[in-house]
Length: 157
Image 1 (spheres, one colour):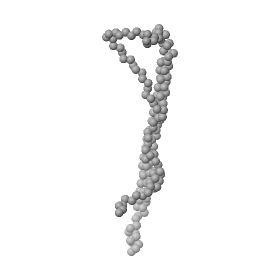
Image 2 (cartoon, one colour):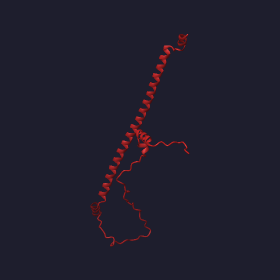
Image 3 (cartoon, helix red, strand yellow):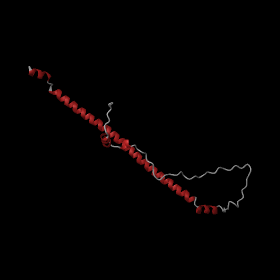
Image 4 (cartoon, rainbow, N blue to C red):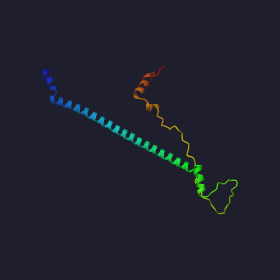
């Protein structure tokens, strides 16, 4: 009777093999899904990093161009060049106290473009500040939580 009981509940060998194959395939598909997610995230991070590098290079090139144009403007506006331009146009340097200013009725002068100095920039570049919660590793967080005293939630009389 005992052998009939075990024989009745014993599964066929092909069913056991199918169960093992199913478990193996489930593990294999899970690993493939995790690897796919990992590759997707890595690809996005690499693409974003490359875009940041390209933008930083573009910023550097624009800063070089701005500095070049600023130095050209300074060269054009230098005293030596301004005096040479005055001589080319047959103009004389005049003392403002000796000049005679005429007021012409009905004449509306053009508004001159005002060249202002560029706004002051600090030498240190401002970086976004990250909170410590976002820079701590899992190990740091775990050790800080374990080192804190445990506070019980029970009400004590």
